[in-house]
Length: 232
Image 1 (cartoon, rainbow, N blue to C red):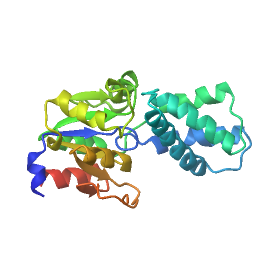
Image 2: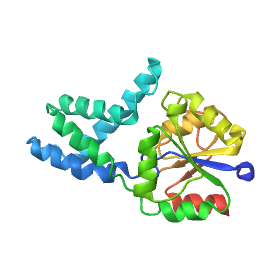
Image 3: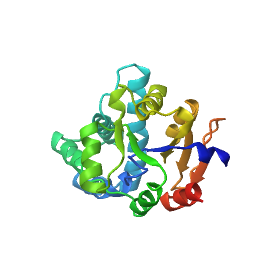
Image 4: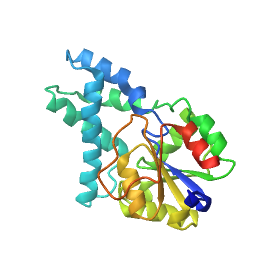
């Protein structure tokens, strides 16, 4: 893998890659469903919600509405998923669910992996979240200092808009091929590869790859395996 020798910076997705969004919000989901008298399992609600959240973001991009805000997309997806399942959320329900996202926690092996990788690479957040929200999660919950935190707000579109990756490379003063996008989201490696970024897929759930010629350069199960692959 000679391309690794050209990499100068790793850009990290935050939601679902660094931060365990599902594990961090399942209890809030369970409490919400119990409050509403729903027999649905929290994992079932989450899986439907997650697909809808991404759809909300894609719709904003396609309709050229710009970056409406990550938490706004979460809000709309939560309300839509609830109603699709025959549940009517109150404003208090929505606020309580969004509050759970303020407490997102990292996957257990992330910090050790980042500590290893920082010795060789610039490590940068490249996320769909709003900058103040990203700064809160990194400073207060992850408690780890990245070289930079780049929000897609700088472009005004959600990933995988090509402008997001190109703007990130420009901010870092690098060519696209010198950047490696690290993400557990398939849309991220598709978007990154389409812009000449290299891409690492953190496939925590053994998901199938997209049916596309734009495949990740590297597939790993977690940050420990990522560090092993990049530092060998």
